[in-house]
Length: 543
Image (cartoon, rainbow, N blue to C red; front, side, top):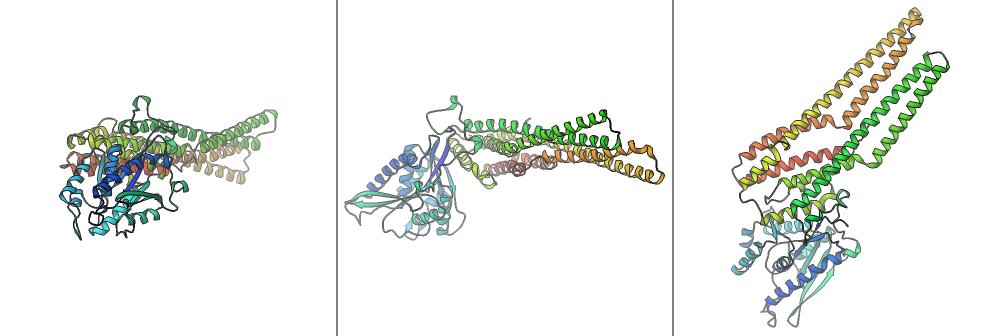
């Protein structure tokens, strides 16, 4: 099993209030809160074994921070050391001061409890999940986001509770529509003592194959953390995690890129050489007398042609079977994803750009884990000053020697130079083929009109070049297409212009919010260029 950890997100929703003293005088509502917290701690501890999670999986919670059930879940996560994301229908200050039809949602004491929990180190992020004005619509949208981000959901309900729009029962219905496993926990009172009856909803139980533990893509399937960087905690340091992925993917990308480019040259070169042998054999067979010497040459040319064709075919088949192009593309994409994550440094910000780009679905568990590690570690150890973060980012990511601006400058020049060379070869070869064919036509006309017998050699030579030069032209174009030269030249020039302008904007940013937006925009564009390349490269072979 791989030892590179992956996060499993557990969403939660529960009632805002337990059984009141007025309706149940034999029961203290605080006892329900204590019992719910204890039950959730035990259930979260037993959940990995029931879900069939491996040693490299770790839980991450996601919920709101309302009173009642949300508080119980948050305390349980805190006590178990489970990272937690708070997903709210509006900013936390407005959420804690909100009023419903029956008055304030939080009493002063409850608001203070929520603020204390929000300050806990295990809370790795507060995010606003809704953008609508209507209160009920905000709650519905928050439920949708919670389901979207959860691998499984724990939903606590009271019996005979009709539910409300945007409430827990509405969340259960949403989860079932999306085929997300839901553990429904009914909280009852028996002789004044809270009891909990759980049930996986029909057709959503893990044993019915609805749930699949998050898995690694093939490229990181057997990747593990260095032994020296492993600790007792399953949750690794982000720097080690990101660097492990980047180093492995970069090495694989470089190896597969070299193999693909060598294979392209070999395949095109062998077919070009085979064509030369075929034309020479044809010239010998048609234009020279039959003798042992000429037949020997003919056999040599045909044997060489056959060997070259077989070798080129086998190499092309090997290239296709190895899936070198798609594996190279995926490893380079992984390398750039990790490089982008590293570029954020100790700045506390979510990797929102990873979710707006069309990245392969197989990467999503890994991407989610990377974002959780970034948020978890930077919540405690973030930049002391955003200006320091900006300076570090500008230097290491954009402006220093070897950074992205210099990379795109050199890469654009190299791709442009290679593309121009290929275009020149095509142009000269095509013109030469036209000239050779025109001259051959002229000699044939001379032979027909004047019956000149002495131009056979000229016809043969011109026929040879008339076939050879078009092959050279096509080979140049094929090699340029296989190496994506024209697209790379154009893209790299655009990226250089964008990054140069973006560096200026980052350097003159006047607020942390402006810097955060520019940072995410820059990383989105950088990674977006790789995603676009990935889409082309994955399905580009050697023509």
